[in-house]
Image 1 (cartoon, rainbow, N blue to C red):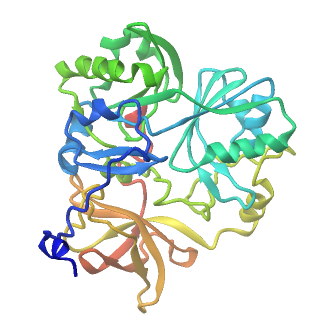
Image 2: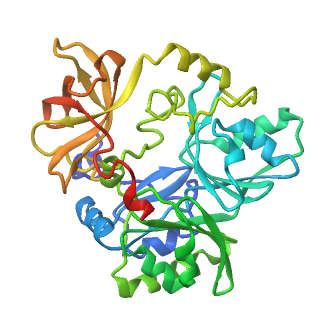
Image 3: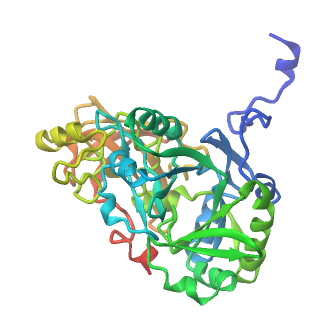
Length: 398
């Protein structure tokens, strides 16, 4: 063994992420770094700040105050051209006739076998101009491939637009200070155009938190990223704004999915409990990618399902603290391996361990006992209702 290796202090707690030019940076990368990023992950080929203080401190900042997130890693794929609506209607299982200009929709992009390729928020900017605000997968290439063979007059490109999120109960106060009272007139999952100090932005009443929230999509983001970040943070300072990473404690409480954890290419919408008509709309004979497979799955039923679980034992940690390095294996009462926990955390307000588990449909009923190989050892668990907090989403709609 090398003498250098022997002399190093090896710990399991702090492997570093290499900062170098090959990984892309969001337009807010250097601005957000000034707030003391402690952990990055890589998301859409970008460094993504995930933790500044500790997960519980950031959780309480989110649910009690107002927070600012660097989510410039949510790359914007623009679909434009005379046939943009027709192309988008073929791309997603939701019926885009129910998405008017000025609205946003949470959508799945599905493959031919019905598997979920991405779960972006879709923004209808103009009659024939859409943005896909991406989760973490290479959907630009998928869309360009579909467009190449579609025979439609449509342009697919990544545009220089990047969002920040303003989330928390005090988010409205910050947004009024920035954009005036008219921002309060915007309904949930709608958008509006605005200018801020000469910067062109789109504001949406959306977020990844389960709390009241907004996203500010900055055009010419490479040029104005620093200026927008500082302007928003200064507006938030009197309200106690704290810079945090996406809060996975709150998103697990709220039943919000994470692509790469809870869903992947081999997961279909019916398995995650979102196969209802407004997410997979089998409208008339209107075709979309994956329709035949999803019709068959709906008719036959699924063989497995993503359920909520409550896990006994001591705290399993808070997800973004690095406590859940891998999925937790799930066993039935006889000890047979039957599934996996895909996301789990300790809920500070509920003082219990909660999470999602993909299990056979025979073990998906509420009250089903399970045994889970958690990071604290083998623990008893039970299938429970999800979401764990605010099931009707009254908070973000408020």
